[in-house]
Length: 506
Ligand SMILES: [Zn+2]
Image (tube, rainbow, N blue to C red; front, side, top):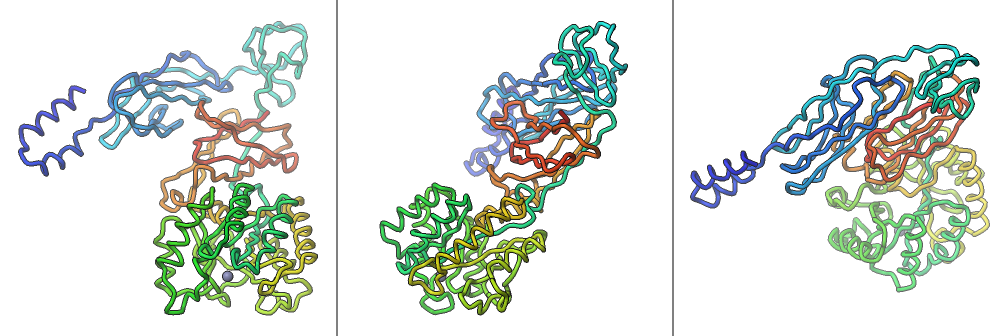
């Protein structure tokens, strides 16, 4: 604080004019006040997790903290600046063998401060085979076969895996991790869109499409002509959104986008304003009527921060499966449903609906199917029975782990976050992994929302019982979820915005 006061005095002395003061005021912050590390044991071991906590009791606030050991970051977190209020943080750490000099660094726009260091040594326990006639003190480590255990309390003649022995890890095991192409490690992604809600002739979307999708636990995606909706349409839209279906913007009045009557201000922005008023969830995807638009309109859409993507225009150049590694969020290919199959890439096959989905699974890509109404009087409406048959097939692929069915904005967020938020995995001494994500890429910043979940496939080099996963920051509200793929592989669903994740063997 002394520094800040001094600086303010200089400003008032040197500057008479307000402009000068205003310019200088922006630099009149100081680096954060230093943090204090909580007391830690001076001798630790490489198998135990330690919670390292710090506090900055009062003073200049920081925006980010990093715990360093011998100059290398162990964990890091964001902070909210609130005047001179107390700031604190903690994380769980397993130390590598040897000496550690721990320091907490606090940083804000003006610079960084360092805490006083704390030193500790992490020892590798000597591992001996368990013996029935040996007494073991609490905290002792033993090995049986390849499994390492730690005694929870004093014990004698209780053979692992008796309750007293806590499993630590498998000696020699190694884990690796990779972000899956699609959520839950599904082979492919599929979006089921229904255009033209509020055209009145498409009310089969309300009466059939959404109920059939919901009955199978599938997420649907409904395009609204926002300037044409009656109250009952808005009520339906609200219900669909609340039930987890996607609502996307399909213009204000379905004007032909290449007609002089088209206006970006009305057909994109005014429609979006109305949708934001009426829909309880975010509306982030746009589909131009007739999949046509001028270059100016596309540019206007890309410049609009409300949107993260759009269905491609130039349908003939943009049919088929989107590639997981290279799809462009503003050029999402689709396949248009017609009863005869005309204009589909799969025209001539027995069932264009099935052919498109199968193609996506074969390519590991993303299919976006465009429908209009179901069993109503809309253009190329799909008969109910055919729709039901298709959804049954889709559901069977979901159950087999081959398909992830989701709205376009969820698929875009997942795919773009996977490509731009680089994951690093660090192996710790006991074979556990620390996963961290680099969120600095502007593309990552745009597409990774707080609730964007990525699925990470964790593989072991041998059969393992189970793995556990938790966020390294001790105050995480929820933890990652785990599902087994086979005896060596698991899927971990996590939120990269929650910080680093620790994966351990159990
Ligand atoms: Zn339309």
